[in-house]
Length: 263
Length: 257
Ligand SMILES: Nc1ncnc2c1ncn2[C@@H]1O[C@H](COP(=O)(O)OP(=O)(O)OP(=O)(O)O)[C@@H](O)[C@H]1O
Ligand SMILES: [Mg+2]
Image (tube, rainbow over all chains, first blue to last red; front, side, top):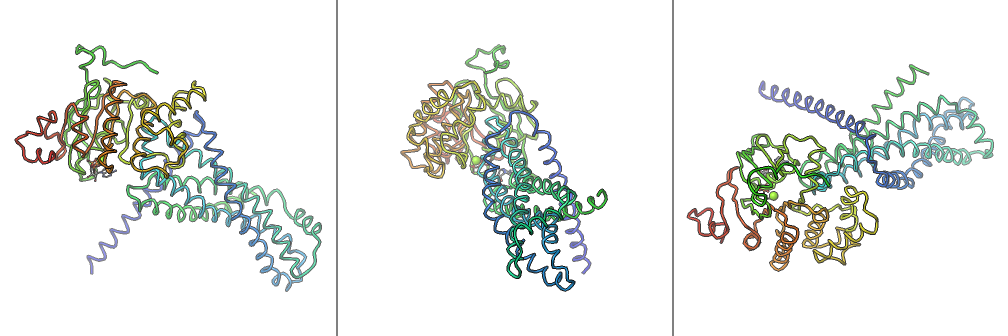
């Protein structure tokens, strides 16, 4: 009995140690990004390609989820608001929840699933098949070419996707309202615009840059550090999604606290 | 591109000076001691074949040579400079002069053959015009006999073609040393003979020095000036193909059957 306990204790200790070890390594990885991002040569072409792959190719997915978010949010909130006779607040409420919280988080989670795992798998398989080593021995900095471009692309594209999802979500809200009542589009949008202030948009936008950065960084980290063997490609992709999603929630929580503190 | 380091100042005549000199190289992964004091050298223009059982550390040894894997201990002189003491930029200047053919070719999957070949060249010869770049790609592809594959993706190539494109990709930078990691493994005898002959041709034309890791004895016979065999983390024996073939040591002879 005692033995089992000690072995349990030891395994917990090692897993805690490993977690800290990982956090340290990720931090170093991120630090390397910041030291290399400003140094020439710049891989513009690869950066633009990644923006296309990460941004443009995610549009269909973000469109569908964004629209459904707005629609469902409206339909779900309506009865509660109706109970208080506050149905006229519906457009503002939907827009605010979308912009402040739901669109950033859901879009980021979708992108963690699509983009982070994609990057993890791509770089992981490049690592396993020695393509990253091949760049290294031909005196090309693979970190610069592969990692810096991808992290920059996600950091830039995720906020854009979130803004797009905000818009689509608000459209979804309009459709949702019109299922039960008849609201004119002009009145709906003007009500939405009136209710949104700079303080709703700004903190939410800032946090999406962090979402983007972490989605790219974790995908790259997992792929770049994949172990040998093909099964590690799947592992890299998988743990990229898990870690990126988790970090999105943590960033979101911190963002709320910080916003409360300052605004 | 850059000045040659100090090999020329050594008293030995230039053709005799080793371009690669490895002394007492140690490398272990955790408890797995892979290299335990490996010492060998390669002279200019020489083809050194490295034999050894699977897992004996052949690939690791040449990866140490280009700084892909950092050695635990030992001296690795390439062109007269100890690469273990270089920073990354200095190391890269040496790396440009070395071609490395990976065991599985390691072609960039997301790029066409043209982009695979142009990728490094574009970044190291920035003053090259688009036309010259294209010409050099075509030239080097023709020298490996695959001119028509220029627009293919790596996934459309057979194993032998991948090896050749990998070879073309290392040749395009005109390296002075080429490290071949099993250039013929997994190929039929005819293709593997073609590749060995290609290697010899390249060596004659460009006067490169090479290290060739192989399990393919006909290839070793055709290409080797000298052979070393790795065993238990050290160089077990060294000699020409003919010498080793007649060795007293049964274990050594077993490679030649
Ligand atoms: N990244 C690594 N981490 C841990 N151990 C490794 C690593 N790379 C290689 N090894 C170990 O080093 C030893 C030598 O590997 P190496 O790839 O050099 O063998 P090899 O002689 O090239 O074999 P083969 O002929 O099969 O290619 C093996 O036992 C392997 O398990
Ligand atoms: Mg090997």
